[in-house]
Image: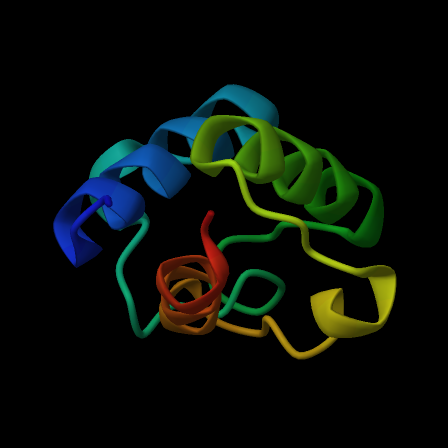
Length: 81
């Protein structure tokens, strides 16, 4: 089971690869759209990469609830296999 830091670091690497955002900017309180400029298409890529990396399923209707990095980290920690 991954720790909160491991999930946050993994998400930061994913966001960096997809959106070119510096890893150190991907903090728990940052909004994907407002702070990190992750558009809806990129968000889909982030979700798919996170599902593969953390062995978790994120249904489409849940993606809209993942507004901040912290939301995504908490979802992954709660729902990872």
